[in-house]
Structures are given as C-alpha cells and as structure tokens.
Image (cartoon, rainbow, N blue to C red; front, side, top):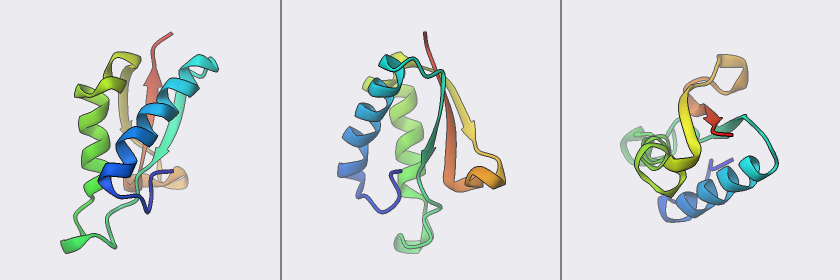
Length: 85
C-alpha cells in the first residue's frame, strides 16, 4: 500500500515489496497507489511513478506486466502486477 507515501518514499517501498513477493513465490500482487485525490491538482503521482518504476526501474526485471485493478480491488487507485518466476 503506497497510498499516503511521498514519491521518494514510495519507490524503495515498491521495489522492496516486489522483491519480497517474488522471493515468497507470489505470481500476482496488488499494489495500492491511490487515485491522487489528495495530490496537488488531483494528479495521481504515485500511480504514474509506480508505472514508470515497474517498466524502467529496478523492479522492471522482476515484472512481466501490470494493469489497473478491478473496482472491487481499488480500481484506478490500484495495480495488479504479474511477477516473473
């Protein structure tokens, strides 16, 4: 759950979470980013950051893909992340 963290706090938290989940053998995880409703101009800074980190950051080597979650799991404020074996 990255919701409520700053961008600087969220990146290492996401990287550590992805690494621990992969080591634990998880194949799909839910990352909650929030929708940016409390951000300046209500822009989803963490969701944009998470998408960038999952495609170009340290976590990218451990990720096969990701997409927005279903409404019951957080909708636009969350991502399903598929991890490599």
